[in-house]
Image (cartoon, rainbow, N blue to C red; front, side, top):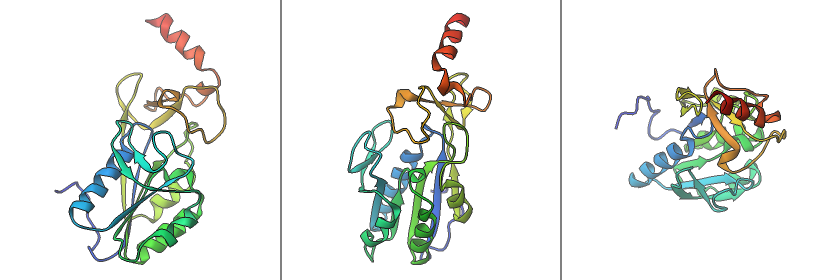
Length: 205
């Protein structure tokens, strides 16, 4: 199946990055790519950050509950020793939660001949580049930009709108704490006053 991307040579390693806002189908795409690799009889391993246990501690899960078994790790440095020599495809979900060392680790795995697929948020709730994702996109052979649907107007969404008053950079919360928004309707200050916009919307309806 031709998905519009030129693949590197099949016996060389490479890095693929799947990015987008929340609800854009990043994990769904990662699961799809891993299932296709499994059908092709390629040995695969999947990893996820220990911090993300919203749906499962030992699986990656999309918002519509498609799941794939995964190794939970605290740091990216734990991944290489867990990768088997005959593994061909390594997937890492929620890459934004890992430190900058994930860039070197992904490069190391790709240089050893493995296909490395990393999914993650490209921007945070303030619209800023998130963690190591910009660097991963820079060194990747393939980058997939996923889009969600803006909850305000229905346009393609590229931003993650935080709907709570929490101000910490990393907030692993239930899906009702966030919405997908387009550029026009994204408000990075909304997290400070979520009730204000909701009240305005009610007055306008």
